[in-house]
Length: 269
Image 1 (tube, helix red, strand yellow):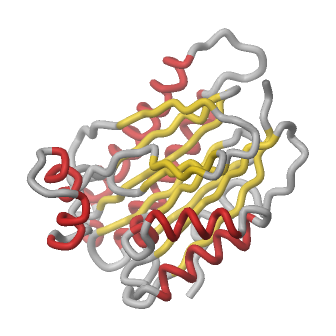
Image 2 (cartoon, one colour; image 1 turned 45 degrees about the horizontal axis):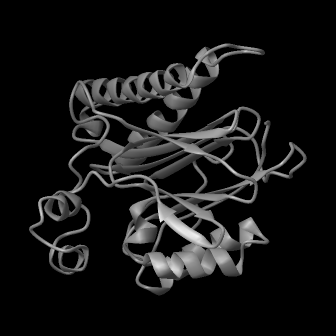
């Protein structure tokens, strides 16, 4: 089955940061959605996140199958891994050759709808959630110190979140010559809503609040995106906040708010 999509996004500097280091890219035509949360040095984080989203888009758009194809799930998974690894190399090389960019890096999370599946790639602690039949589920797993401690049984999720710094990632693009990429495949259904977000949202807004907000404003994705950002700021806005919402539809007749690359530097103060 061919599915259509409706897309909305929002990004905000938050209340504590001097500038927005998040980048977003969405392309309705090829049904690709990328969000990156940059870090490191004055404005270098936003350079890293912009390189990430544009590189991933370019690789997938250039190498994706055109027209009828017998390519398999494995082909799409490998293309995502290749695109993210190319972004990692580009960021790493820029950091080595440009003194102003030394130490920069970025998380990245992406979704690509291929036939009846959302194929998801993830490095870092930006997340993908899915709202289906009124149930919210986190699909990605954070690459963070908190998550490692939880996985080792040293803390419960509640204890780790209360005691440990929330911004210590164990994987990111640009820090080494190679990076491990987690890839997930999720069968999509009509009315599913996928949420991509930087940790500026989920560090400030718990999953229950995210769930309630998506449920309350699900009829209007743009309003839902804005409300999530508002909630994060209401709870302190300690980081940049970026969200992308994707609704799965039965056909291709849906209205998007913008085209490819329009949101790469979509920042509001």
